[in-house]
Length: 150
Image (cartoon, rainbow, N blue to C red; front, side, top):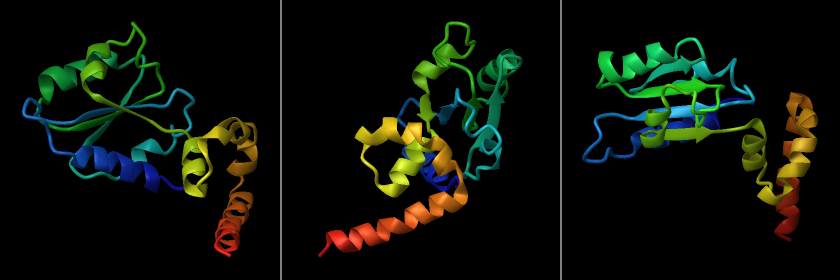
């Protein structure tokens, strides 16, 4: 599965007009399950810089955003709990935008599966992680849609 859906969603967030009090966008991408840890930095977005927030660089990121670079927009990826009181950037999380995505959410959206089936989808996550099975399952979507039209 590719990251096109995530890129599209994030780009839409970035493309919204700034409010009169805003100079830039800061988006925090919270991924506590680390589902996109290997992929996030390959995302291609216009007019935004990427940074990863870890336990070890919180002071640096805070200094970067509040002192060094006050004009650039940023996507801050983190596997930390952004709502934690230990997060040095918690105040920024409150006024910035947050983004969360899971592979299950993306699969359900792509396959047009109702959100009430989320527990079932999570139970069979390993099944959908296999690309061959996923593609085969996805191919049934066209069959189901054409049958429903009859």
